[in-house]
Amino acid sequence: SKASIRPSRRPCSKPGPIPPSRLETAIRSWYMPPTTAARQTPASWSPDGTTLAWGRDTLFEVWRWDDGGAPTTSDVGEFVGAIAFSPDDDPSRALVAVGAETGTIYIVDRTDPALISPVSPSPVNQLFDLAFKPVGASDEFGGVTYTLASTHSNGDVNLFDVIPGDGAEPFGFFADTMIGHNDEALEVAFAPDGRIASGDFSGELVWWLDDAAAALVRT
Image 1 (tube, rainbow, N blue to C red):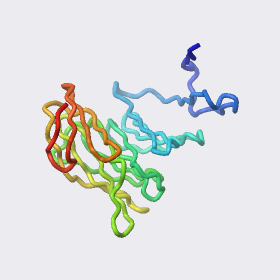
Image 2: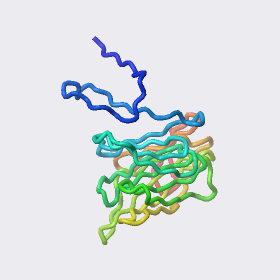
Image 3: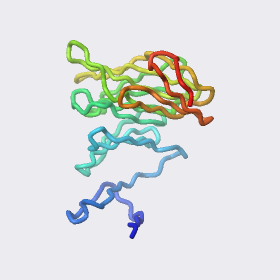
């Protein structure tokens, strides 16, 4: 027989304890106050599955799945439209990218959300999605640089280089724009080997042959 799930009518501010007998099937839920506008609520899991981040109005909130405590909250001052975790869970360089609907991207230190810095392309257009390349590039000094992709209302897919701050504010800088969509670019995703695919409002999917050039295959 199929299992059925009924949403709880009783709001709660944090997850309650789950009996050991239910650990295999339980669904943990949090109650969040309603948003002030009819906007999407973007969410993203950390690569190790321990942390959930989501946007609520102008707030960016990080929840630890295993401790059930209150979230760590940062206010970016703009409506949050997209969230993506960096691929590395090393505490010294674990980052979250928070995309505002206006097009600005905020790079946040996952272990200390007070360490935050903005980055944006020029010109800035409405942002729809964010994705990190699965593997960062290491340098000879042991540092790492992540590639972050964003999609925008003018059809651009922008690339950024993002660098952990090592105890200071992380930072990012605009690297390149891939032009090939004729409509609003809505979604972007990386393959495990680093190739990029993006989709637009018309339903067209673009598979980019080289993430640093505008050579592409349309499917």
